[in-house]
Image (cartoon, rainbow, N blue to C red; front, side, top):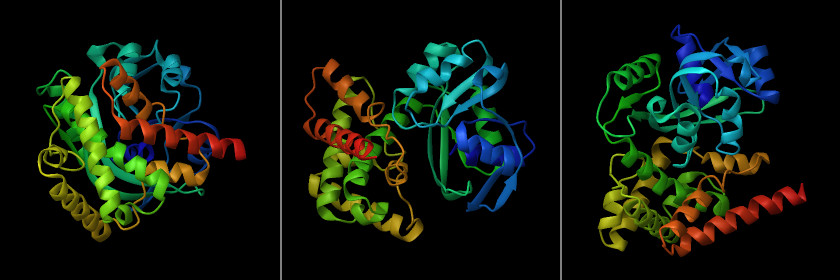
Length: 312
């Protein structure tokens, strides 16, 4: 997602610097950002491999995997950052940004867009629904309006929203279920969404995360990735059919869509389980909640990740 957003902003004439590491940094330095799929273009950008070399930026967008985010942000602690936001998975990200830059410089955000990084360095842009950005305390602001207009005009759909915390938790509630099924079933997204048993598991996971969100003072909405508020309110059988309908939409509109966690699993990359599902499990324990499906899938996904690492 960082490559997709960065490439579109650079193509639109904005000053873009990509913070990257290892082979990915070398690919970008040598070949620029190369996008295929919903858009077909390439653009050169400046690449920085040492974050301490970045002294200032109007906007910092964090789009790495959630693994090691605190350590990755540490070299930027002294940089002059206007505003920062993260499109990472999970809901822990804003806390880490606030610890680094101060709450007044942090915006909430979520990305309902998708892509896949190929070994060649090209990025396939598969879904372009919305990048939502908002003030964590709620309401609208000029800086959010200007930022989202800039991203949207560059070609990645973006919207300013007044309830970003609700939106972030709503996406997370759906994402938790998708991760659980992606790491166990390992097929394109639509295939498990249309399956009645898998859809039932996903609905129950969404409802468990809603319990946690409510305990944290957050109300879910239908305006995010899935209509999660309705999924939690209607009878379970109706919710399952709604989820299967979502699967049919994925089959029609994004048949090749695979969750980024599945892409990481198949590519042999580490999974961000502890930073996402693990965070929710720890948060539930703090609230005195017992969420058995969430706990089980967190442990199962973690086991799959560790077992694969030991085999490697």
